[in-house]
Image 1 (tube, one colour):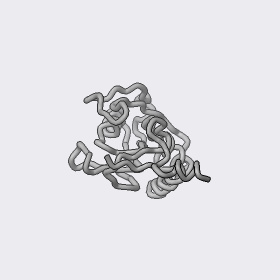
Image 2 (spheres, one colour):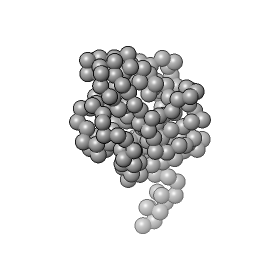
Image 3 (cartoon, rainbow, N blue to C red):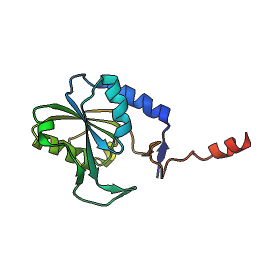
Length: 165
């Protein structure tokens, strides 16, 4: 499997680039936990957006898909989304299942959702004719973000050079 390990500096750069592509017209940001939290923080600062809500959705355990339908562990009440332009933020659009489930819930609540992710994986997308409204990078790699504690480790060779110093 092709894995791409990212640093905090790379994440900051990607999130700033993503924020700079977004219109500054959102009334609320809806962050998909957990992966969307760091990018959302940077984007919210850049756009001066303070109305931030959370959607906790479970589809995955590690790299394996565990569920066909999402379990919403947390989702904002409909009146918080109704008739509002909502920016949905996550780290990656892989199959698209999570962000599409959240988008549907926002629409059902009467909101007007747009999606933004750092990484888009078109080869993995389960929804023909759909893609994120905004993204920075297209890839087919398994992205290892710095907050992926179980997977985030220094690439091979780095430990050896650190121990030699």
